[in-house]
Length: 117
Image (cartoon, rainbow, N blue to C red; front, side):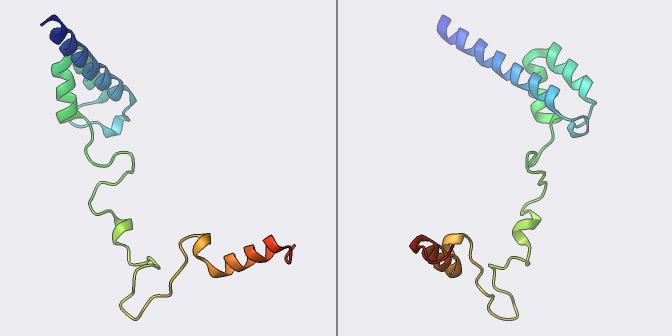
């Protein structure tokens, strides 16, 4: 029973520290409902209740690291992708990498044989 209590205390401490550091590393404009300093004090003084409040109400939702806030993101729905067929006919296939480009492979073969400096 003592081990279970110790594990629960360590988990609570870990959640509290995670939220405390997350509040500190969050930009002022990314917090919701209150200023960053107020969230810091709530998490610091209210321990895990403050940490849970931060996780539910304080931090910004969405794809924070990629700055994508809507799904699907624009770059997935763009019609400018050369690999997607257009409505006015079949698109010309563009190589995805050098090993898909026949001209690159020919030049590499000539270079390996010593024919091309």
